[in-house]
Amino acid sequence: MGSRLASLARNLQQRKGRSRRGLTLAEGVRLVEEAVVAGVAIRGVLIDESLGNTTRGRDLLRRLAARAVPIDRVPATTLAELAATESPQGVVAVIEQPRSELSKIIPIARHPVVVLDGVQDPGNVGTLLRTAFALGSPGAVLLKGTADPANPKALRAAAGASFRLPLAAASDEQLAGWLKRNGIVLWVSGAAGTPVRRLAAPDRLAVVLGNEGAGVRPAVAALSHDRVAIPLSRGAESLNVAVAAGIILHEVQREH
Image (cartoon, rainbow, N blue to C red; front, side, top):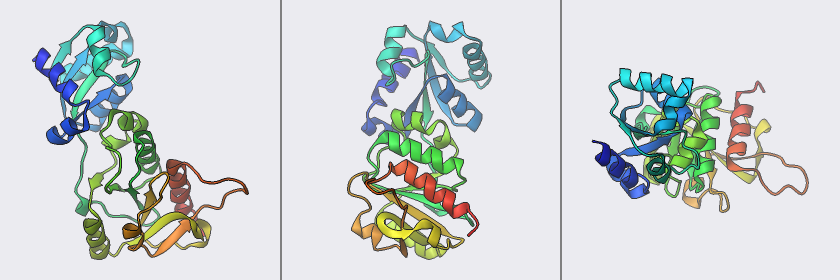
């Protein structure tokens, strides 16, 4: 089991391997703890001797053992090769990728669904998902060109939010059908839009955040009802996409 688990972990370092198997890697004590608490299916865990040196590490080992999770002890050098971080804290877990169905993601009043259109940086994707979850979004829709949310860097940036926030990949056509069937209004985030405080948010709302450089694709923008903007100080060119998402979600929750 040990060598097979390490071989599987190496395969999951690549997006192709993660996509084919529906699995990914969670690195570090905190992220594995979050996976345990969220009830994520854990296929196996690779650890080195350092994990048992702390109270928190020993507690995590007990919780994994209580769930009958296969545990493979490997040299620290092997764990370092399998981890994307410089300090994986003695643990890398093979987990099932969190996924949901688009039909099950529906916005509620003052809590829009976020739609990611070509957000390319895994760190931005993870931070955006963390922000959306913290501000009560009921889910996220991932369109083409968006970085893999199961990328270890995205998982770390999401800080456990990926295990709790429903995520669904969709094509442009599937997005259009979902909007129509559920009576969902779509806002597109963009510099030329109406300031967010001037717009009255409908009960069923989705907000699109686009590519860090190119913004939202025309095919997706064509589905929108309004273009929403965040007023910036003179000389400021733009905001980080996750920061922009946080501001828009927060403003929607405010009383107008």
